[in-house]
Image 1: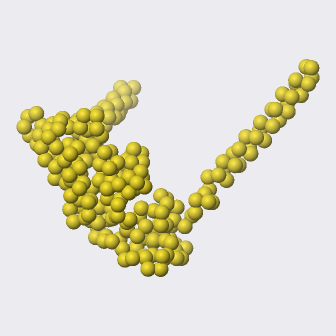
Image 2: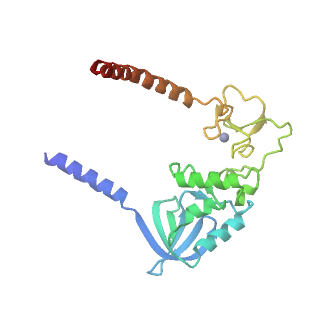
Image 3: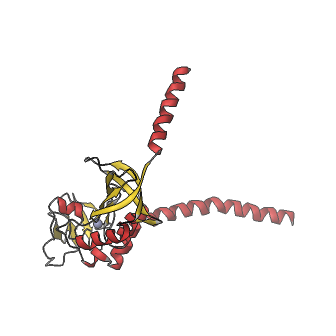
Length: 248
Ligand SMILES: [Zn+2]
């Protein structure tokens, strides 16, 4: 009995410590690039912060300077609240950053100054939506038709060769198919343009690859569900009608 009680207590403390996020409040005294800044804390110590869920263009990439400029406008000299999500391998705090009511990470993506760093914040719908909108409006870095994600650039990706034959698909090195509507079309490392993807290639879940939006799998299921519902309701409606008749 006491053992199980102790286990529950340990579990409870573990969950509580997970839920208790570390929050730093300080003045932004330096902006290194579009996703890194330094806070000077009340005790005069400084803390380097990597902005959570976003990735700004690398220094050698286009739009890097504009991204740094934008972060400077948003944060420099201001009082910043940083909610630490985790620490990276250099011990740097990775944090959601707020300047007053402004969500700085979100503002960077909304303005087309940074990418949604999707592998580190896959569930952040706000960042995903902001990026989709910025790309559709061709704001900031999205002015270029095929900008390279910084994480691909760091792995050595460079702009692809022109699509000479106007092939409709871009297949990445690992066999992922993107169509011309996708933001990854023509961007990823060592891919190829093609008219005919191979059977072993798999469709991108974002753009659908070779699956056209005219034949998605959802409506079929919805139709079946609707049919079942109707078939189930029909006897009930008939019964009700019969009862009304009988009473009349
Ligand atoms: Zn795609």
